[in-house]
Image (cartoon, rainbow, N blue to C red; front, side, top):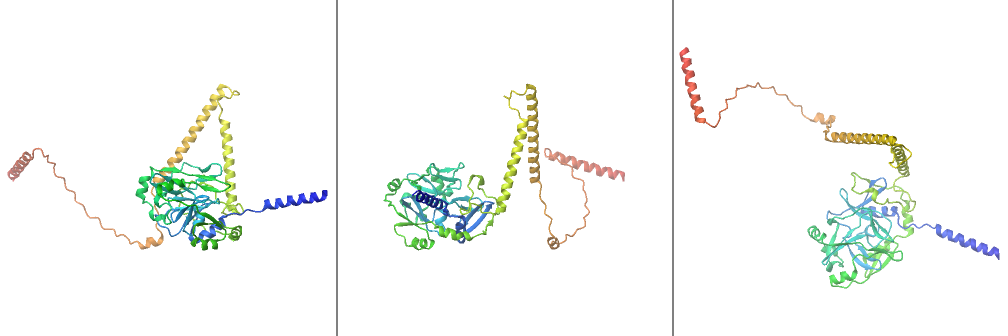
Length: 423
């Protein structure tokens, strides 16, 4: 009997260990890469920061524009009409970069939509959340920086057209957006309900009162196969088809070992240290190679060691005022030494800044190559013409022009008479 109990207990423990050890793949960067590559280009801005830029968009395009809003059990769900919308509007964040335009930063947490809201009595607007915004089950949306989005990020529409299937046909232009942006109220209303992320947004009853119509709740039907998603996405009626890939599809995407990234040509305006690093979910490594990871780790260790040595050296020179183990004379001497060290550092810093400023002001001359030298025609040197120098005429004051003319005529007559006498 005891043996049977022990065997049963061991089997239960073994099965629980096997269940706990079962990997939960979820979504992965490889799956994002292979699915979104036909619709855009992947750009590597940094060693561990890779973003996606959609193709075929104009200058007036904005995220969360080609689609419609639906009220579901998860709150406001963005039902996109774009082929890449299942990923870019339910995972990750959007950012309008000064150089690259709208770029998408991947993330692995699914939500019905990731937007921020603005509203007043006449208009309602939404804009994509930036990569500085993260979601917490206890606190909702949290920003790592003081974020204030520009009015160009926003899609504003009247309440009577908010629930329209083609809401993008009724967006306000940039001039009207700028006019009403400052008078609208700001809101983000994200919360969790039984491990589900809900986008409460603007209250549904408020939109119904302002728009003059009733908003029915639509049912969300999740599919884990992309073919089923494409087939049902066109023939949907009152249901919302949400595509969340299965573990089998994610596992098949792991065969991609090499990534074709476009190297960033210019620095991005993203604050890299304020956003989270995209990692591949299946192995926990960075998108870059192991050699790059090792090099970055060595650089960080060397930087930390150098900072520790500098801190110890500074503490050796700095004496706290309340240190009773040293005498007044020693404290005065160490204070003088600390002031000298600070002056030397400030002087060196100013010298470096001055050298950089002088270097920037100096013009850069590029020497032409051999082909350019041969193509330029030779300049012919013209003989210098012999210049004749004439004595400038005397200055005549304007105050007494007639008197000056009479005196000059008189002098000329006297000079002529003197010459005749000499003859």
